[in-house]
Structure formats: C-alpha cells, structure tokens
Image 1: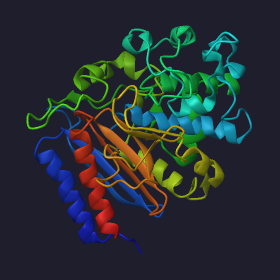
Image 2: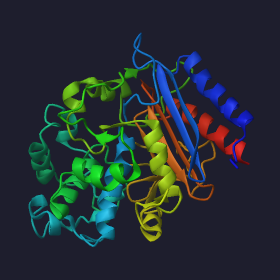
Image 3: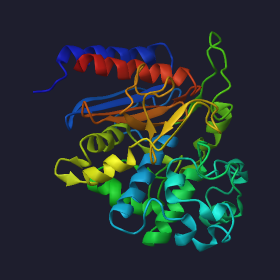
Image 4: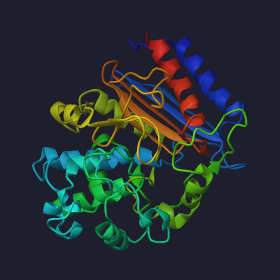
Length: 375
C-alpha cells in the first residue's frame, strides 16, 4: 500500500499547478518515487511561450542536474576496477599535466568533490567550442588550478563534466555520452534522457525562458552571475547537440526521479543493480564542505558528484536533511534521493529563475509538501 494518500497527491498537484498559475514558469514536470514505486507523475503548462502543451515526455535541458549521470558513469568504472578515487588524473590522462607540477597531483576524488582547483577557465566562456570535444580537452590541459588542489571547494560548473567525461573515455575507451547510455540510462530504462542530442534525434527540447528576479528580493551576490545570460546559449541546437556532461543533459523529470529512486534504494530498482550499495555509500558521503564556495560564494556540502543536504541553500526542502543527496540545475531543475525515507524526487521546468533563492524557494515548497505527506 502506498504511503502517499490520494488526498496528499491532490494537494501536491494543486501546489504544482499553483506555480504555473502565478507564472513561475511556462511548463514543468514533477515526478516522485517512494519505496521504489512511482507515486506522482505530473506535467503542466506549455513547452514554450505560446507553444504546445507540456507532457510527461517533453524533454528539457537539465543544466547541472546532468552531473550525477556523468558521475555515476565514472563510479561504475571505479566499481569495476578501471580506476580508483585516489588515483592521480595524470596517471590515466598523461597529457593532463606536466609531472612535478601542482596540477599533476590532482586526484579523481578532487575532481568529483569540486576541490581540484580547476573550477573555471577560458573554456567556460567559449560556447563556440563546446561542440568540439578535442578543443575542450586541449583547453583543460592548458588550464592551471585557480586554488591549491584539495584545499578549496569551488564549484566546477562546466569543467566538472569535461574532466569526468575525459576520464571515462581514457579508462574505458568509450565517449561519455555513449558510456552513460550503456551504464546508466539503458539499464534503468531512462529512454528519454541523454547527454546532448544524437544525430538521429530531433531537436524537440523545451524552450528555456530566463525570468527577471523578483523585485522584493535582494541579490545575495551568489551563483554564477546573470542566470539569463548563462542560460541563453542553451536554446541553440548546436548546444543541444554538443556533449557537455556538466550541463546539457536532456531528459524528463520521470527519468530523473527513477534514477534517484534507484540510488535511494542502495543502487537497485526493479531487479536492476546499477551500483553496489557500498559504492552508493562511498560516493554519497560528505567529501568537502565550505561556508563560502570559491565559485558560487555560498555554503556547500559536496559528495563525489552530488550536493549533500543540510544547508540553507540545499534545494531538498526548507530544512533539508543532511543525509539527502542530489543536484540542481541552473534555476530550473532539481533531483534528489532520500535513502532514509526511500524517496526519489525530480522537478524540471523551462523557466530559469535566480538559483540563489527564487528557484530554491519553489522547489523546496514541493519537497516540503512531499515530506509532510509522508510523515
């Protein structure tokens, strides 16, 4: 018997609809699993301003909610013995750094925990190059750490995915988009999700709209800057077809909730063992924390490829439990797993709002509603 009553579902659906009615975004999806079973699967609004109706199959840009898909691909390779978390990156990718340099000491663990110091560089501001994997890798090889590796948590907004993706390619011989499909998406039946679009896929991605900040809120000086400018390139087809494993996952809330339902249940869902429980435990332990992230300027708690709950900015509920893990994507999406309550949650919209408060407020309202209903 479901732990979520019909009345609770109706109230959560009403809150979901309310966000659309007041214009927080044009279209959205909400999906929730409890105890490995789908209990909520909603879609509403439109795919674009004045566009067709949003459906549960509408595909969205997931921004940084893509990162856990890339990370789990790498974790599966660690589990199989291809590499270890404390290996140096240069041991698998010899042209990554010159021996004897500070950069050569960077480990796989530091990349996954956003402590490598390679948080941002020229490549972040070159969307014209994002579709050229070799050019991106060349830029990464030329980068020097902005912080001493291992010392300063500094969110790797874009570099995280390329670093992880090249490690995957180096140790497995398979490009990250194909490896993620084989190791994550296909086993779990995430049929509407991928890292970028393939050549045989139509560009049917929902249109993103950057919303102005509420004039009732102060700017806390956090985040990646003007969220509307950051989001703008991601409506272009060439960006949809690029491989940006930190930012251009394309998929649905239903697929994302299924992914987190698996991780909340120790890496198993419906007979598919994606990862061993020990791997899930290792990758979701706290690896780094800070009161002022070197990139975002706010508090953060990092696992290996995931954000942990337990801060005032974590988008997993107003009082997000410290054991929850997941990820958000540039003021438009969030997914998380609660292994104690066995919840997989995903909320995806096409309205990009300031990620430092407005987006967190709307996603927390829905997270709180789910948690309250399960008490």
